[in-house]
Image 1: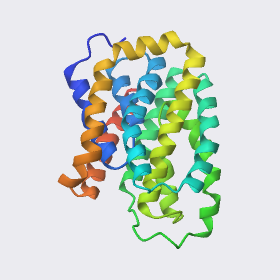
Image 2: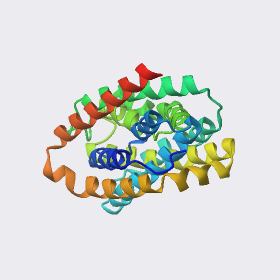
Image 3: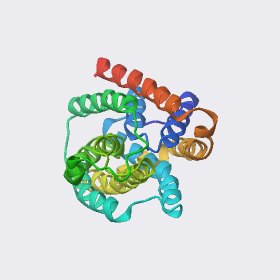
Length: 251
């Protein structure tokens, strides 16, 4: 168990939440990696990470919806296909070595997706691949529930490449995808491990949840105004790559 949460770990969670929230994501994979490096029981990692995801993206999902930026008809189809798969992923048993390898690999891939250029002029010009984007929801949802992430950070680049919608609509869809997948993945993890393990995880990591609340709010409201969005994406990619490589080396 975590016990007394080190201040440096709480600060790392705060910075992670700030960076991810400023670009519309939750940060679940990085939370899991940080906890793995701290020596926490790997069975608890998805529980803590998914709970942190929910905290971070709830606010951004609500703000997107209130601003009328969410393309509900298209977004709900993707979310509806991803959520059950996320629940199944959470239910699936996985060995520690496999879990850590998948987690580390997902972080390295996350860093690469962060470096992908984003198009702002996609509205009205969807590619032929755009209609097939819902097919990606189920495998991404399953992986999200299995490893304890939201999956939106992989969904968003696909939607951009397919010119599925304009940039803010894609960001709002990815945020909603992360939120719902995290809820369903957490439910699957609870069924697999029992609710008692969730209580132990959340009770021991309460300072981390407080840290991501603060970081998520600051990131979604202020960070993008202080630094250019592309700089924030580069900083996030650097953070993710370092943690991912370190996790793979130690796995």
